[in-house]
Length: 262
Length: 190
Image 1 (cartoon, rainbow over the protein chains, first blue to last red):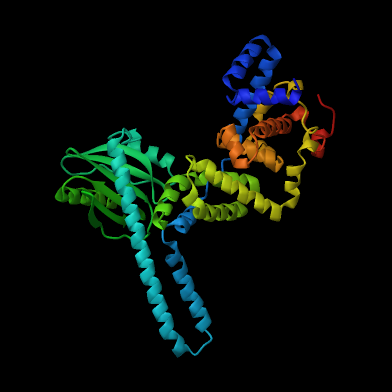
Image 2: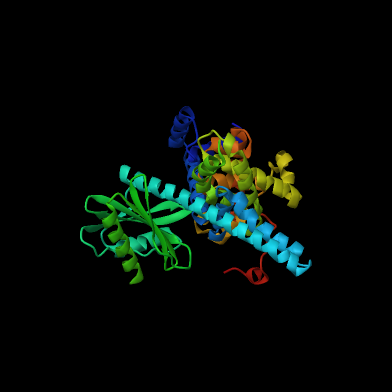
């Protein structure tokens, strides 16, 4: 056999990419041929060394964020609007100021309005994702990655899997049981999901780094689920459950209280 | 298909593979700045074509687009690197056939820096298959799709890429080009 073909075959064997016939043939040859065994072993070591030693370049967080914004639905208005505003400002900058002010104001208002509309669209999309994630978690077996009622177990585990350390707290209200946490994917990034049981109902609480400014909880009902979202301590928070509204509000208050005690 | 639906599909099929896309682009361009430009351009392209995407593997589909963007970038910015594309035969004598070489224990000791440098020094067509195989664990078939080459070529390039890696990582088999610091070769060895 030509040496190049032989080398390719050994590589394919190590990669488990040979068809069954060739695989068996190779195993038989390996049994008889010590130098072939050495070659295979050498190749395995090389493969290990590369896999363990080579840098894996994950997308930097800032870049990921930029790309997520880039592909978000209806990006046309949101991205263009501020650009148009500043272009107009630039163009009018050397014109008589009085004439330009009115137009700039109008454009700025339109830009802000479009931005708000887009932010709302983003929230809607996020809401859909939150509902989908909640439903998935309650339907399948994948409710938690780390099942523990001890937050000192859950928090380090989540921190090790994420690029941030989420607040993890038990809730000081009757009927609340902390079940654990898992890593989920929302808003174009990996996030922490904390799971509680409230009576017979599952509560998912999603958290990831976001707005620096705290905001009040906004409540809504989506397909029969209670949801709330807010920002607190530099973290975005979405909570969802199928408990009744009163109990849900109590859960939200308990989460906010626990977070503010940190 | 509506824009919203496309955006949703994009987010569920394509965005989970952003890391893989970045890793490939980073290894092919060998710097962060250009990798970001290339991946951004690839995403914009992918966004445009997502409506026509019917396959199963969003990863292979995205990596194919990223790979093409990378090679366009290389063509424009690193024309010398691409030379090897059309001239594969001339490389055959670079690597000795694997069967002549003993397995290397020294490889175990190769540190991260050495391994990264050795990969970065591979000709781009070999670097590409090696990164896809070892860092992304992609099957020969999918590598063939991504790099737009027959499976046989995937096999020959991968075997050669590993041959070159072994040479670079095995001290005794180092090519003569290596520079040795003066202090290291002065004096008799005990």
